[in-house]
Length: 101
Image (cartoon, rainbow, N blue to C red; front, side, top):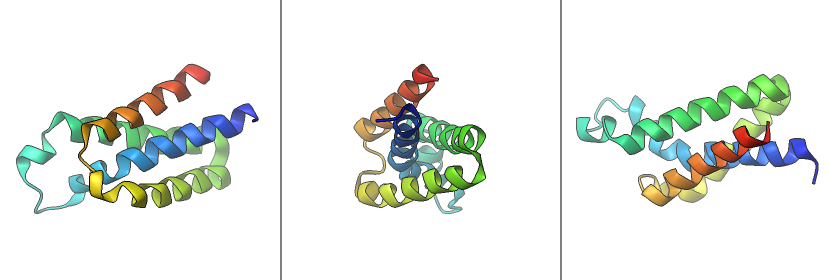
C-alpha cells in the first residue's frame, strides 16, 4: 500500500471517529458539562487537526475526498459518539499519522 494512501486512511479514521463528539460544540442547547469535558476537547482538536492536515498535505481535491470519506465513516459511529474508546482510537490514528510524516 502506498505511503500516501496509508496516511490518508489514518486521517479518514481520525475524522470519522472524532467527528460525532466534535459536533455538539456547535449545538446551542448542548449542556455545559459536555462542552467542557476532556473528551469533547480532545475530539475537537483531533477533528480540526485532521481536516487541516488533509488539506495541507494533499491539496484541495484529495483533502476534500479525505474529509468526505471521513464524514461518511463517522455515520457508522454516530451512536457511540462519546465513548472514550472511540476518542482514543481517533487520537491514536492521528498520532500514527504524525509519526509517519
